[in-house]
Image: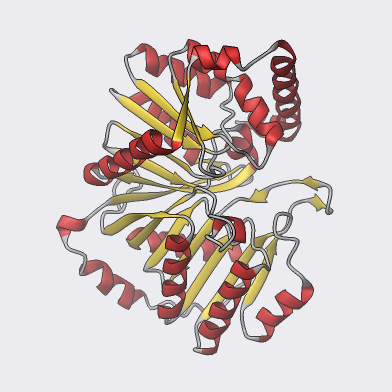
Amino acid sequence: MTSDGYSLRNRVKLVRGGDEYFTLLHELVSKARRTIHLQFYIFDDDETGTQLKEALINASRRGVDVFLHADGYASQVLSRQFIAGMKESGIRFKWFEPLFKSRKFYFGRRMHHKVVVVDGIYSMTGGINISNRYNDMSDNPAWMDLAIFCEGEASLQLHNLCRNMWGKPYKDKLDLQAAEEFFRQIPAKDYHSVRVRRNDWVKRKNEVTRSYFYMFHHAEKEIIIMCSYFLPGRAFRRAMSKAVKRGVKIKTILAGPSDVMIAKHAERYLYDWLLKNNIEIYEYQKTVLHAKTAVYDSRWVTAGSYNVNNISAYASLEINLDIRNKPFALHIKTELEKIIRQDCRKITPDNYISSTRFFRRLWQRLCFSFINTMLSLFTFYFKQEE
């Protein structure tokens, strides 16, 4: 591992949500030999969740140690029978609990991770949860989402992170010798420098946030950000403005249709600021946008669970992968530009002003103020302690 946290012996590829993601996920589960770690913010007991449950049960019956860590609030729809069926088959299940919760109230950290690790060798990290809305169903296409598939040393780091978060001691079936042999067989020409980045205010980790500021400070030509709930705080906005003043072109790909309309109205309140600072805005039109990734200068990518807002910055547990590899970064840039051309509507000063009447603008301002007030209540302590 390099001094700045990157491991070298990795191969990575971009994975789209829907069939592509879930096909690969089931392939990974079917080829697991020793351990599977899963951490998900949302795990539903719908068709998608039930199919994965059956695949995990089959893996457990083959002697694979399966650990499923689900957020205690966002996944609370899981029935006792669903969980009991997994436990009876040998799957180890655990809630990530906030400080206080009910079906209508939540206080404390949320585990916003979307991570799968198999045998400490293979992993996927991104924005995709286990639910029909992230899968291609016969009557409904998947939400637009992305993940990074990694073969290599970064997967072993993710395995260790999942193991440490589990907390309870257990005999680890991981074969480190087999993992090391796999890493040695990756050709040097295929190396992708990858580092695992975490946000966890209890552990005093704000690595993903720092990665974004690194991007704002080091970009020379262009930044493209795709984000589902884009509400950058003042420090983010200052960093973006400074980058633009240095001559950096910034494009944002944001949600058009949204599953959280109050957040979308609040987000649109910031459009005036973005446009005044010459930051391009593109709204994704095909379905709900849920992806979280960014690329700069065709040289560096970050992708994972982190949204550009203060919940991700200060309140949630988040995991991203930073990838330092020019061909891969160019591939991501090309894919994002293709999405802009084919699936997005550009927001301009003219069409923004013409669609924003007084009462709509007032409503956006109220939504923005409400969300900022709520965020301030939940993030004040952490920001004071930084």
